[in-house]
Image (cartoon, rainbow over the protein chains, first blue to last red):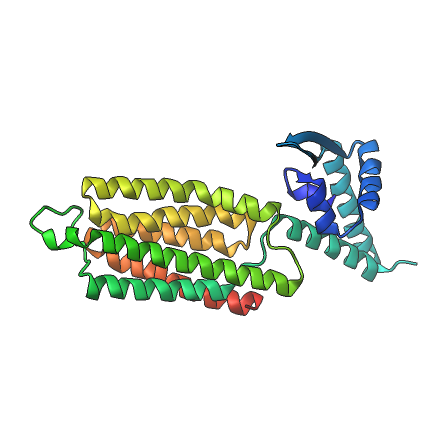
Length: 79
Length: 207
C-alpha cells in the first residue's frame, strides 16, 4: 500500500522486486487488498508479454491515510 | 504488547517504503563534482584552444575564425556531455549495488522520461540557433533547459535537485540577459554549481 500510495501505478514484477516476496506471497496479499477494493488492477500486454499493473483506489487511499493517522495517534497517546 | 516504539518503527517503515518506491535515491554527489570538473575543463579547452568567446548574440561572417571551429566545439560539447552522463550512471550503479538495490526500476524510468522532454527540446532549439547563427544564446539556453530538466527530475529523486534546477534556470536567464557574459554564467552553472551541489550531497547523504 505504501508503494502504491506514492506511485500512479506499479507493475507486479517491480512490486515483487521492491518487496522481495515470492510470486505466490505477493499475489495473495494483492488479492486480499483487491477484495477490499483498496487497489485496482490493469492487465495489458507489452508486445506479447502480459503486464499487470496495480493502482490505489480512492477507498484504498483513505484507508491508508486513516491507518497512518491511527498509528500516529497511538504513538501520541502512549507518550 | 506493542509499545510506542513498535508503532514508531511501523510508521518509519511505511514512510521508508514510500520513499524507496518513488524516489531514485542512488544519485551521488561525486558525479556532480566530476560533472563540474568536466565542464570547467571543457570551457578552458574551448576558450584557449578553440578561441570560443561569443560576446554578442550573433556572429557575422567577418569572424570566420569562429565558424571554422564549430565542428570541434560541438564535438567537445558532446564529449563533455558523455563524460558527465557516463560518470553519473557509473556512480549511480555502484551506489545502488552498494545498497543492495536495483538501479533500473519504474522510478528510474520515470526520472529519465521526465528529464528527456526539456533536454530534447533544448537540444533541438540549440541546433536551430546554430543554424541561424545566434551563437551567443547557446550557452545560456543550455543552462535554462538543463535547469528545467533538473526541476522535473527533482520530483523523482532528492528534493535538492529541484532547487539546483531552479538555480541553473535562473543563471541561464541571467546569462541570456547579460549576453556578453554568457560563458561566465555557463561556468558558474555547469561548473561551480555542480561542484558545490556535489559536495553538499556528499556530506548530506554520503557519497
